[in-house]
Amino acid sequence: MADRRILLVHAHPDDETIGNGATMARYVAEGAQVTLVTCTRGEEGEVLVPELAHLAADQDDGLGEHREKEMADAMGHLGVTDHRWLGGAGRYRDSGMIGTPANDRPDCFWRADLLEAADHLVEVIREVRPQVLVTYDEFGGYGHPDHIQAHRVATYAHALAGAPSYRLDLGDAWSVPKVYWTAMPESMMRESLRRLRAAGDLTTFEGLDPEGELPRMVIPDALISTRIDGAGYLDSKLAAMRAHATQISVDGPFFALSNNLGSQVWGLECYRLVHGTAGPVDPGTGAETDLFAGVA
Image (tube, rainbow, N blue to C red; front, side):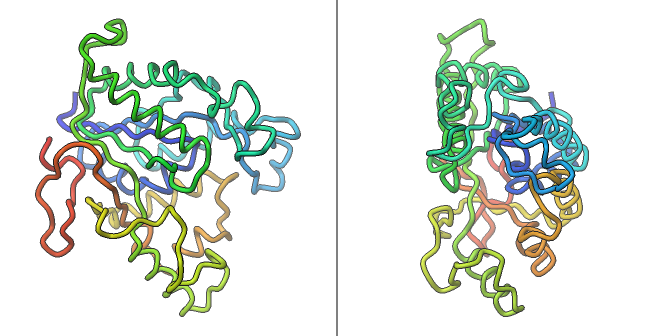
């Protein structure tokens, strides 16, 4: 085993790259073992490539298989060699948004048995024995059912994996020392909006006022425990984003944001420590600069 091991749990293909791509690429380059578990294949995603529109769920319903290939390409750009689908590829289907027909399907992730889904992850945790676990907050960042469910599964699996008398057939107990939730700091969001508006960009994050109320996904800076500088891996992250071509348009707001702000947005990735003890912090920001600080 590598001396440092990190496990990330995400809902759909592309979530990992947008939120943690630079972090993943950095730790791979530094020799850490990076394991990614994706809970669904994203079958209900919008198809942004016109010639692939037939893959949509309401047509050929072949998007999930296609996104497996996109995921493999993205992981190649990030250098991640240990990627897994929760319970196996296609075990849990993308749930769509609350109130849509997809959310009523019995095979969707939102309706999965929590213990069964958690057990799949318990087995991975006990095999990999990570010092760090990364997932979403209780709202799933922006409220998508699959993100919320991924949070629940990761949280439950973390507790069960460390119980020495639980499901010995899933491996020896392992308590993950540090658990983080991905986070977008308020200061970063406001400054990004200000710079975009000053540059004449009125479409990216349309409707958000830099000085006004921000959505729930934006977190007060006081709650940010860790800031990972991944500016040196920005090219890898952007290449991985391009690999998720059905979901991220090179002409869309994500790339508009990267063109206008570059590494100031995509190269810095932030987290909230929710389990474990923080390691040494940077005097300037009061935040850790390493997710493994204090444990490896």
